[in-house]
Image 1 (tube, helix red, strand yellow):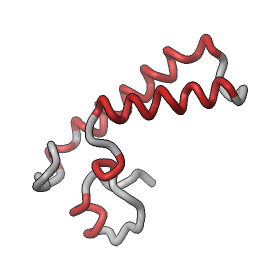
Image 2 (cartoon, one colour):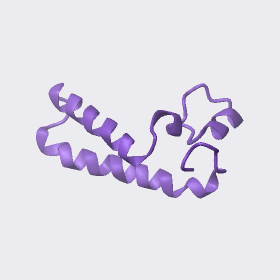
Image 3 (cartoon, one colour):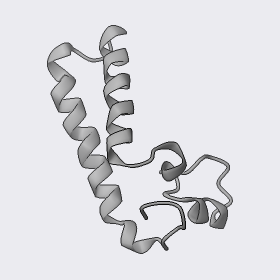
Image 4 (cartoon, one colour):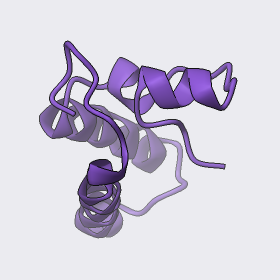
Length: 81
């Protein structure tokens, strides 16, 4: 089940999890967190170092896909959405 995009959606669906916009200030913030986690996954042996770029591109594509759906969500004051 995907995380709610913003606080309004979270409240509407009574989802106790923090929204994506509460977790990350935007794409750059998300990708910094993704890069950090990719590094942790490589260090733990769950990803090969050669898979770093593939993992990064996959996560970026996911952000772009979800962000492109933002027209479905109302603008929330204090965010870029």
